[in-house]
Length: 69
Image (cartoon, rainbow, N blue to C red; front, top):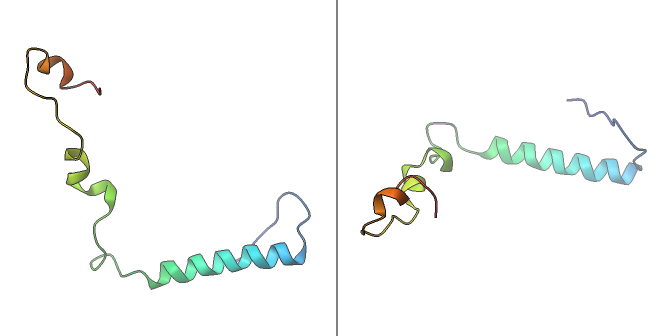
């Protein structure tokens, strides 16, 4: 892996801190379970769509069905 500084003039301490963050993130990604063992992603969770409050029954419910309140 190559890290390239595009702007600025970081000190050695700043470079070391940035490298520590990158290495910690890489270690966290490597420690995650593989695709089959990993729990579902929040974006693919059907409960995310149904989590919003449904409109209450009434004469204008049909108009509020497709528009956020």
